[in-house]
Amino acid sequence: MLTEQTDEQLLTLAIGGDEDAFTALYRRRQGSVYRFALHMSGSPQIAEEVTQEVFIFLAQRGRDFDASRAPLGAYLFGVARNYVRRAMERSFSESLHTSPAEDHADSLVADGDTVEDLARRQASSAIWKAVLTLPEHYREVVVLCDLQELSYAEAASAIGCAIGTIRSRLHRAHDMLAKKLRNSSAVALDISGLAARCTS
Amino acid sequence: MNCNEFTKRVEDLTLADLSRSANEQWLSHGRACAACSSRLQQKQQLAGAMLTLRNSTAMLQAPIQVEQHVLRAFRSSARIAPAVEFKTQPQPFAFRLSRFFEWGAYVAVAAALAISLGLGFWLWQHSSQTAPQSAQAQKTTTEQPVPHEVAQPKVTAQVPETDTAKPVAAGLKSESRPAEKSRGSAATTQAASSQSLAQAAQAQGYTPLMLCDPISCSGDEQVVRMELPAGADGSTGTQMADVVVGDDGLVRAIRIVQQ
Image 1 (cartoon, rainbow over the protein chains, first blue to last red):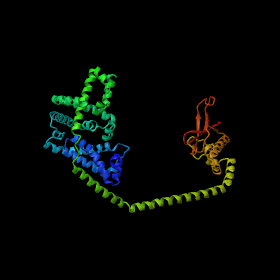
Image 2 (cartoon, helix red, strand yellow; image 1 turned 135 degrees about the vertical axis):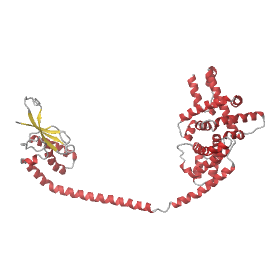
Image 3 (cartoon, chains in turn orange, cyan; image 1 turned 90 degrees about the horizontal axis):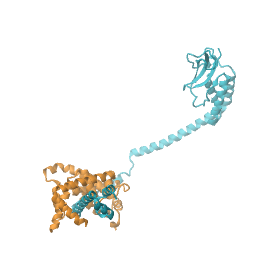
Image 4 (spheres, chains in turn red, yellow; image 1 turned 180 degrees about the horizontal axis):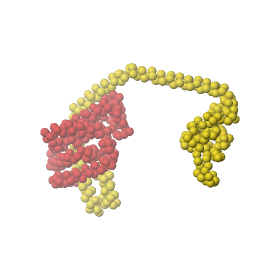
């Protein structure tokens, strides 16, 4: 029965102390928040930490949510974005002494046995590395719009800027990504092959 | 569809929408124009790459420990919430004090209203008793010539020594006061005082230059003797005039002095 309710209805129940509603809301939304943090940071530790903090924030400060301003999904991405920033600033000095965040990308993409799976894995890893090297304000629009499939309006409400800003940042980010991917010709070949398969 | 429309359309769509919403109109333009074709191809490659990345990470989720932590935090915050509400139930001293001052303010306003009503009633009674007497007194003062000292309360260096004229507007002001008290309406008071201004000015040989209403002409007036420019009245010699000037600098009335 809880699965039929909207996010906002579940949050209202959760604010009233309904643990089942909060659990349902968590299970519905934790994956996208986790993946957003993971795509942004490239670090599973940061993604776990951010997911936990976002939902603890929701449990404690869920009353502050205003449904008239943005849907709950965009609101959660907005909260997650702030926590990702903080976590990445905190881990910046640590990352200087450890492996770069992009190295996690290899181990996180789905495994497979066939040659095609291997090629897909390499291509995904290369794309993710390219995304991770983008400046933060370009990276977040790529993650929100291209990987989380948010509309421009939802991404704008999550980031807190105008729709035109999202559009221009995304356009610029795509140019940068295309340039980065073009530089690695092997990856570009893999991608073009995969793209042909995906779009067909 | 031209290249501008094509580019705008491509930029309006997210990569995910791009692969979904490609229609024949697009594709035909893409086939015809080489530049747009390469741009579309680049976008589609990027869209495919993003799709690959999205699919390969689609199953990633937060570990179960995170859910346990979050639910523990939810339970503890749910336990705290009623306790916080309970703590706000007893009214603090400052709140009670503010309520007391609130009632005190109501009482003070009621007392002020009662006093002002009583004072107003007393003033109304007093004025209705003294109105006939003051009207008689005003009548006698207008008939008698005004003493020299009273006639020039505020005179500048050029005030004539023989001037027996009372400042017209000042005189009118004193005349209009009983009228204001006896009549209830402000409009009728204003009209009456304007008429009496004109009458008083004419009686003293002054020519009123403006109709003065009691609000704008309620200040002090001065009588100034000044020399008119030659030929101002059509004659060739110099001509002197007494001018009643209000404190706003405007001339209320003028009288030509016969030399």
